[in-house]
Length: 189
Image 1 (spheres, rainbow, N blue to C red):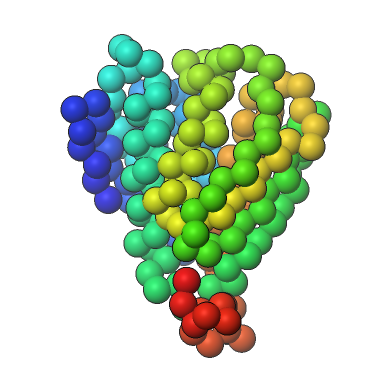
Image 2: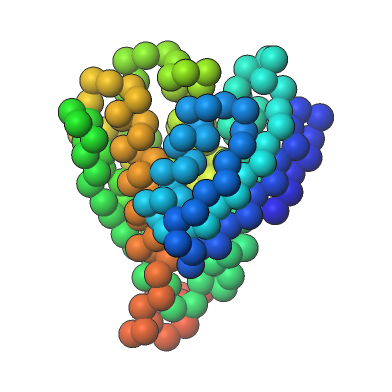
């Protein structure tokens, strides 16, 4: 998927049945680090190339990567037939503990309850973590809950959240041979 605006130029390729390889270049070092964790812990092959107006700040780049990644996830999931749909994980990283629950429902919603002690991690504003996940949810049709159960270090909180997201997306998008069609009493998402 590709997204080009006056503020950004973003290309995302994802293989949700991959091995966890990542080729990430957004111009925001910490964000690259987080996207690599999504790929590695979700066993996705993920390529992201983003050029944005970083002279302004990181907002447009992070949000547009989220939008494009969400669109890519939606396309990769196809008609959603046979997928497990639901998953949850609790992921620790040192003192941080993140609960992440996902429903690939087609109804986008983000419940985000994480407090970051620092305003920035590297060149990335910590408020952009929530904006990234919101953009992914809106454009992939995900119902996602991310809650920090513990944590004092902003880097640890964010990293555990991205790892947890990769893990729940891997589990929820996995094919379950017991499921015929989509896992919904409606028969559709």
